[in-house]
Length: 255
Ligand SMILES: [Zn+2]
Image (cartoon, rainbow, N blue to C red; front, side, top):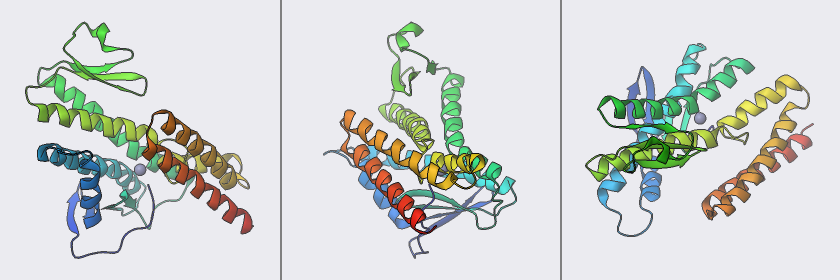
């Protein structure tokens, strides 16, 4: 996602990954903690695992964007803040092709992380993989499965519940969020890809067309959220539909 970069603060944590500077704003920890403590009496280990998974997953996602930005000659930096992460590049190539590949690389890095995790589970001698259907066909009733995007991600449970929780959270965050991020909705990665594709097809009307697509897709996701019984998903996508509508009105007024 690309939103405004927060100003530097005294509580910032700085480090580098593969040569790319990463800054973590204090609000990142606060929001991660709030998301981790849902319900009463959540064990501290569960919250710590959640924060670790969130940190790793967001850094990997933004690293996907940043490595592609560097591939196109830019000098990117990563910022983690209350709204998630940003891969910022002031001097990047702005061609449609580079922008589309930079946007795809974030969710792509998350999918790669999920694949590496399942591969690691197999390498350490455990059963694990993806099944396009239910896992009963795998012939092992003791497998744990997460149904995600029409497939089931499964593995043979580890001895400790912490290890199983970590696998569950990593698969859930990287596959589910990666897929949601690819929806053609502003300001998600998919919204940026949709804008570039619309501009390639219709240079004059492309921005308006991509905003209209964003309004329809976000409204549809808000209804899907309600059908899931998730007020959070419904409100979030309802809000994104509204901000796309506002952007469309502002764009029309400026022409
Ligand atoms: Zn992204």
